[in-house]
Length: 216
Image (tube, rainbow, N blue to C red; front, side):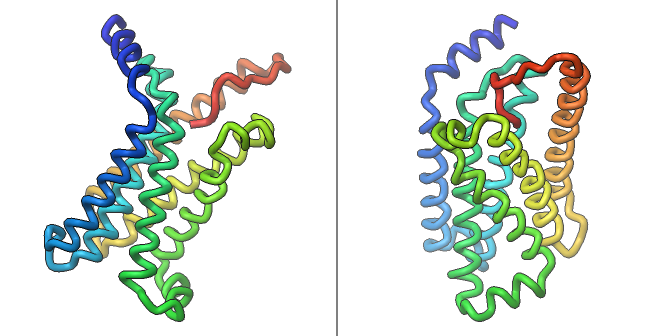
């Protein structure tokens, strides 16, 4: 416990904007690698995959924050918003690379979305993330109210599953790596579901509204 307490004290000294800065720098580095041949013979496909996969990693990291606090007492709550918004940044750039560099012709975009199920699933996940990014500010929480904000932001669970399923469906075979991502997300959601069940049992006779934490 001393090591965890020391870690939590050290983490409080790290500003959340470090995550944003690292995300922007990594994206710039990926584009530079694509321009200079560092992403192999198919740089656009490699760039798309790297951006989407990193975005999924950030979503998983954001989902892991609350379980880490509950199980291990590791407190990374102050980074959760930055993790979520950085995930949205990666996935947005992933989408733009597909739209502009891969497809190119706007007339073919809708046909591709409808024709290819993995794109349909990925697009659905992205659409679910948009309102979460838009309402990620403290002002949005105040305007919506904590309860409504929490309900809306539970969409991240479905978006995470859709993102992982999108990754699994991209491959023509059952590759291990996408299944690991999907398994990690389902495990975190199972922990979350267990928490909601136990909280419901404790709060059955308690009418007080809790506002000390957000879902995640």
